Image (cartoon, rainbow, N blue to C red; front, side, top):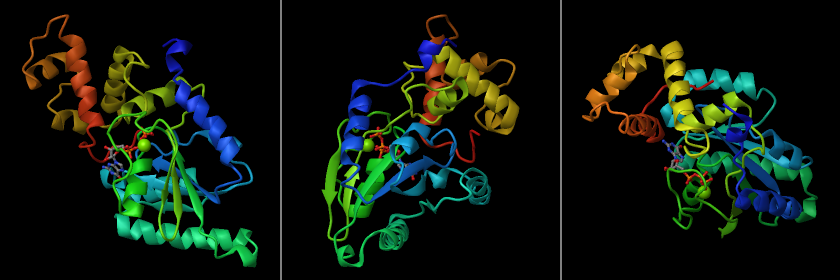
Length: 265
Ligand SMILES: Nc1nc2c(ncn2[C@@H]2O[C@H](COP(=O)(O)OP(=O)(O)OP(=O)(O)O)[C@@H](O)[C@H]2O)c(=O)[nH]1
Ligand SMILES: [Mg+2]
């Protein structure tokens, strides 16, 4: 895969990074969301640089798609020194975030400022679940949510009685290594048009063959002849023009958030 294919940094992302820098004085806590299936790939290191000096709280989304015990072990490996909240249901998440934010703020703010409503910014890779989490926490469907990367294009405040939440567009590093770009494509954090379809398909097949052969079997895919299997599965003749359709449909099955118990790293 050539280096050009790894670059996805649309105009709204560049603009958002600048805005984040300007807003640094305004928010108290940055909540960085991580996808349970790919904790490492979903942590944007350039974001951490920009947030230096700010209070950070990590929040893991899509935990319903993975094994909880394995996730706990992975969190210990990847984020041993951080405060990490594992998203469960929305009520529990609300209480956990509230408790942790108050604890973190009381460490930093002067006593006389403790009563001022905390402002939280929600950051992370595209499609990780930022807008969904704010909708849940604020008990309002004020933010657009869709299962595709790049839905939120501009920042938006959501004010509630206890907190002010700031939704942000998904952010990626300007340059990604090949492995990270592939994983981000598997979890639908990068549009398929950025990393070539053939590369994502081959990458996903190789990953599943190596790590989750049973999943391929459950999906009725023969490891040796995947395209033939997909042609049967989707009732579509195996012709040159149908091959991209078959590959896209298979990747879309993963993007549909229905396949469970897969860790991509
Ligand atoms: N299974 C599952 N799906 C989730 C969870 N959180 C969010 N989603 C789904 O993930 C998709 C993306 O959610 P959004 O809230 O739009 O993600 P976002 O981070 O705001 O995305 P951008 O604005 O594109 O950066 C939606 O289909 C949500 O329903 C979760 O905890 N579990
Ligand atoms: Mg969004």
